[in-house]
Image (cartoon, rainbow, N blue to C red):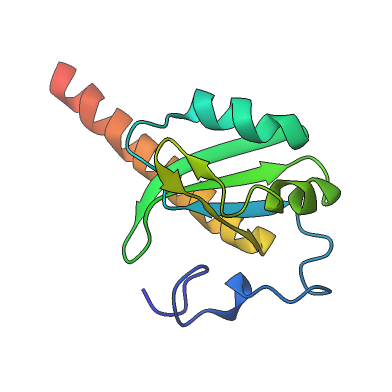
Length: 124
């Protein structure tokens, strides 16, 4: 939707050195279907402690991983992997505003909650 964090009409995703200097979040695009969270934690955990990681499909971007690091300097280190080929695809790594993380985390929790409620209803 337009205006949501990370959407094409939202400016929170833009990289501008000072604006994102204290943010701890990266977006990794162009993921192959063979990659799972443990693969990504192993590779991107080398640059620093990962607080959380979400893999999802974003229309217009495909399969995307959003990683939130413990400290902002880890984002710059992770950017050094930008353009590297991994599992047959060239990764596109972009630092993003932490509010984008918050949005995706809330959406993820919402869908997990709805699924659990539906599963509980099916049991009864």
